[in-house]
Length: 420
Length: 106
Image (cartoon, rainbow over all chains, first blue to last red; front, side):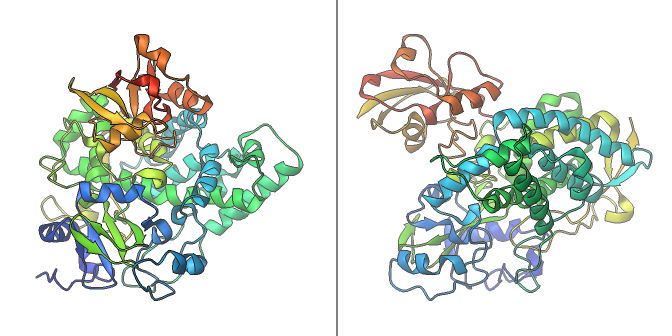
C-alpha cells in the first residue's frame, strides 16, 4: 500500500528500491509540482526542466548536491532572495564545491577542472582502461562469479581517475579501495561525516606541493602548473580540491551506471546476446541505461527570484528538484519511455549528466569506462547471469539499493558466469 | 538578425534567426533544432553540438581556436568540415549560411 500523497521522499525508505512509479504519480499532477514537505518543487517534465539548467540568475546551483537538506540557514523573504543567499552562501552544504557555484566563480573553478580532463588525457586514459579491465577480471576469472561493485566497478572507477590525474602506478594501491561517503542518506543522520576523500586530498597535496617546488613533466607536474583562464595561479589547495572532487564525483556514479547495466544484461539474455553479436550497439545501450537508471536521481536548484516553471508559480526560496530519470522518461519526448530501445534516435538527449555549465565534466570518461568494461567482460565471460543465491530466482529477485535520495544504484550485484 | 539554415539529421532544413555575437549553438538550441544537444552549454567540453560547414560557407566562419581544435581531433567523425557550433560566433556576414547538423553527437 503506497501513500504517495503524503510521502516524504527524502525520508521514506519505501521509495529506495523503485522510485519510478512515484515519479509517474508526480507527473500525473503536472510537469512541476510542489511536494507536501520541505518547500520543494519536483520537476518531471523534460521541456519544462531543461531551461532551468541554463538560467543561473533565477535558478542558483547553491543547493545543487543535497537540495533541501540541511535546510537553508536563513528564512527566505520576499520575491528576490539573491542578497540573502549571497550573505549566507558559505553556510550552505557543499559550499565551495564546483557543483554549488554560480557564475562567475563557477567558470573560474571549471577552467581548472577542464585543464585536468583534456581530450588528449582522455585518449591516453582509455589505453589504461583496457589494461585495468583485464587486471581486475583476472582477479575473479577462476571463481566463475563476482560482485560487480566491490570486485570490479569500485576499483575500476577509482583507478581510472587516478590514472587520468597521473597518480604514479606504485601509489595506485593507496587509492583502490578509497570510497567516499554518499550524500543525502535516507533514514540516517543528515550530517557531514568525516570523508575518506580527505586521504586522497592529502596525497594530492603532496604531489602538487612537491611539483611546484621541483617541476616535472608528468601529468601531475602539468596539474601543478595549471593556471586559471585569467592567467593567475591557483593555490595548492584549490588544485587539490578540484582533483579530489573528481574522485567524489566520478567513482560512485560510474559504478552505479555499470552495475545497472550489468543487472539489466544479467536479467535479459536476449539483449545480452544482441550486444555481444553487434558491439556497435554498446554505446546505444549505455545511453539507454543512463536514461532509465540515471545514477544521479535529482539535481537541485534554489529559486532566487519568484518565477514560473511551466504554468506553476514558484516562490523565491523554493528548492527545485530536477528528477533526471523522470525527465528522461517524459513520454512527450521519449516514445515508449520505460523500455530500452536501441533504435531510439534521440537517446542522446537524455539528461542524466545534466545540462548547461554544470553538465558533468566527466561524461566522456563515464561513457568510456562503461563501454570498455562491457567490451572486456563480453570478451572474457561467455555469459553473465544474476547469482540466484544472492538475489533469488528470476521473477522473485531481491536487490538492495543505496539508501540515498541523491543517487540511484545497487548496493551489491552478484553475478555468475562461464569463462569464455 | 541573421538567417541561418540548419539541415537537421533527418534532412529537414530549419531556418532560424540568430543574433550576431552569439553562437550558432545558441541559435540552434533557442529554436530547438533537432540533433544539437549541447550538453555542456557552450564550454567546448562535450562535443555534442557538432555541425558540418562546407564549401564556400567555410570562408564565412573563423578558424577553430586551440580548445576547439583539441576537441575536434578527439571526435570520431572529425573531418575538415566539422565544427563545434558553440565555438562559432554568428556575424552579419553569415546571412543565409547553411550548416549541416552531424548525425553523430556522441
